[in-house]
Structures are given as structure tokens and as C-alpha cells.
Amino acid sequence: MRMPFIKVYRAFDALDGLPDADCESLVRNVWSRQPWLLNGPRALTWALAVAWPLAWGLAASVWPIERWVPLPASDAARGILLLVTTVAVARLSGIAMRDVLLWEALRREVRGAACPKCKSSLTGLPLQHRAIGPPVPGDAFVRCPECGKKWVLLDIGLTPRDLVPIEDRAVRQDVGTLRGGRGAWAGRR
Image (cartoon, rainbow, N blue to C red; front, side, top):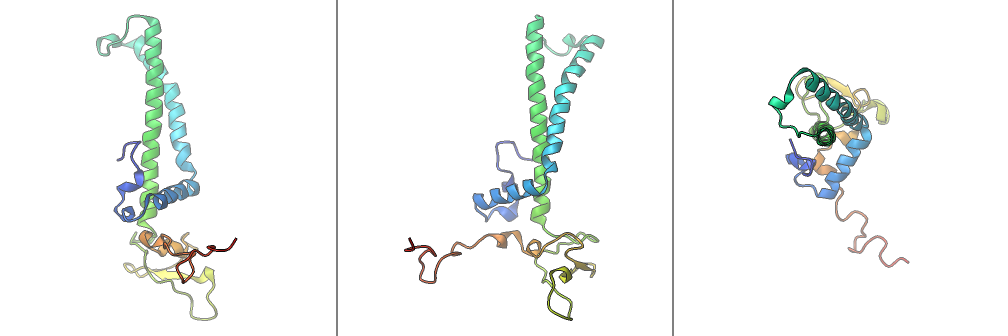
């Protein structure tokens, strides 16, 4: 598990060779494709913001919590302490939940395409088309190397890009340059 101030993508060995800009782009893509990643932590934050003071109020009325928890003597100081702990617990719990969900989504993205039947990786397998007629995107399929099942990519929610290993998805540095080594737009004004 990472701390909130450390880059989450550095927890994955497959992303070590990629620069930070590509990894941050991958994280943004994961966030945009899975908006529910934000809803869970927000709901937890608001639920704890309400439940924490209620639980402390109930605990203080039922048990003598001063015996176990050192509390200030004045009511104003207790109110400030309750406010500070409510904000801290709610926010830190939301951040921790966000980090766990983002880590899981990135793990699924890095692991890549998996066979729905046996969970074997389909990454790197050649794309095949039916033998009759021109290739049609809806007919593209792969065969799982473990169980031998043929999977049509559209049926399992994958694209041909998902079959490319994550390390090979980066754009080459010379893209957009002319053969002479100059930039594609160099000298054009």
C-alpha cells in the first residue's frame, strides 16, 4: 500500500521503464474510464463525517470514556477536538479508500487482458480473424493459451490495444519527425 504522497504507479514493475508523464496519463485514463473510483471514497468521507461525532457522543453518554481517552476539561476544547478528529478521520479514510481502489484499477490495467474462464493473460497474443471475407473489427478473436477457448474481443470488452503489453504502448520518441531528423513542422512557418 502506498502513502498518499507517493506516486501509485511506481508500485508496479511493469511501469518502471515508462516515464512519469506516460504513467500519469495511464492513471488519468483509468480515472476517466472508471468514474465510480471517486464515488466510493466521497461516500465514505461523508458517512464518517456524520458517524464519527455521533459515535463519540453516544460513547460519552454510555461509558466513562475519560478513563481510557485523555480529554480536555472544558467543553469548548472537547468540541474543537471532536471537530478536528472528525475532519481528520473522515478525510484520511477517504484518501486511503481512494488509494486502494486506484491501486486495484491500475493492477487490472497493468495485468491487461485476461481470459474470463481461466484468468490467464491474453496480452501479447496474435489477433485472428475469421478466414472468409475481409477482416471486420467485430470478428477479431484470440485463443486462450491455457484453456483453448476462443474469445471474440468485443464479447469480452477488449480492444486490440488491450492485447499490446503495457511497456510497448508508449509512443516512440521519433514519431512526427521527417527522415532527415528534423521535426515534421521544422522550417514551416
